[in-house]
Length: 139
Image (cartoon, rainbow, N blue to C red; front, side):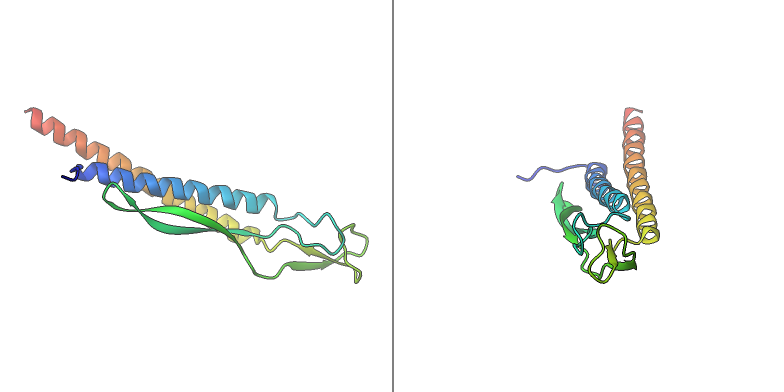
């Protein structure tokens, strides 16, 4: 016979899966921001390529949660800047820069933070409801 879990326990498990997914997303965004101005170590070589998380539904406590399934490189073109004196410049004097847009990353970070906070609120609300239910049952 399958285990029956309280609704608040399921809600907490689903919210916890989302917390882990958003935490992983924030780590990837932080890595992208840290490498936004990096260049190749070799002349004409490719610099850091922006990474993007891929999420998928997963079974959590008999419900559907979320998890980060993989990290994929963003295939958009690199930026190029004319700087013939730069050690990473190609034969034409252009330096390839990462395809990371700091403004987009900052907005993604804020969105991930808000999603994280919302899931924390779900956990806190579920715990509060559970405690109120227990208090009512004690009477």
